[in-house]
Image 1 (cartoon, each protein chain N blue to C red):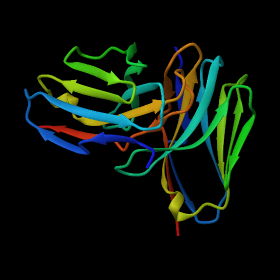
Image 2: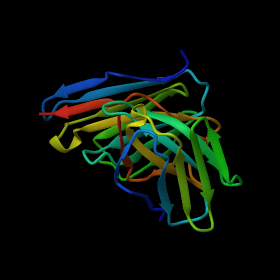
Image 3: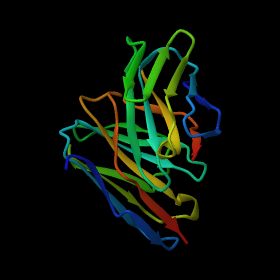
Image 4: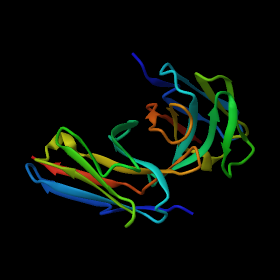
Length: 113
Length: 112
């Protein structure tokens, strides 16, 4: 199936730990994104990579570090997790760079305890 | 700074009704606008994508319109069904950027 896939789907971890979320797309898209959906269901962009190059870096704590080994993969590493990091993190991709229509992954629900 | 608002925040209707969801944006210089559906605990499913040069797009019982000059888009759902119950999000593709700005969402419940 062509899709944007994220792993893991659920992640429960203790404060202070370091964790990673992985995202892969097989749509042949050039651009990938990380969005955060808070408890009020509001979606806000965090990062975007276009052909492995970082193009969007919103105001996000530097404990969050994206990595794109190739244009089909975009991972998110989070250091020293805090309670406020609990949210659903969505990966998305779009063709040809720019807002050309997103395809979203199913999300990773992160709970920090 | 682009801001996107959706009204109403929640809507409950009996099955079979036609309904309209509204999306407003403050900056008319948009690249396109995309409507999504989100089911509880799930990801976002793309419904319709309207380019800035288009006035509307249709898919099945869904019709989305775009009026850039007034900063508005509407999603029309015909003959609503309980399976349409979900949160509907509009997202504005900002010109000159690589990102979408999302609205606050409308939570729809269609009663059988």
